[in-house]
Image (cartoon, rainbow, N blue to C red; front, side):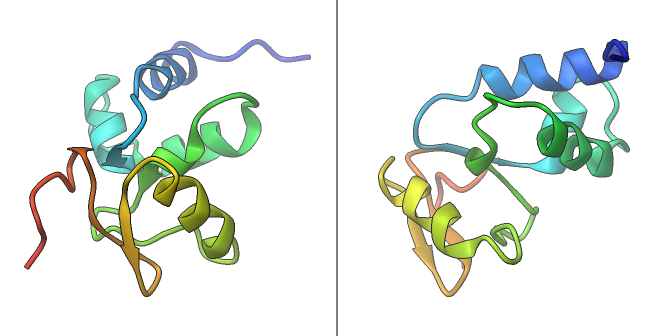
Length: 101
């Protein structure tokens, strides 16, 4: 089994620090991990790493994971996040804490 690279570890660490109700973007995670342009890599890490709170990460526009919107919305709503039509509208913390216009 291959060992995760340093970027993978930093990304996983940032995601693990997300608190319930905190919703951020893939780009936010990449920037916090020290590689702001690695937003696509964040998605790959989420796809292969078990135990991460993947539901707290969305696109910069708030879009939920395509094909998994129902489960994604259910998990977010359980944490007090407002989701409408497949997008985060408001969250208690993180990028979407202020109502989007």
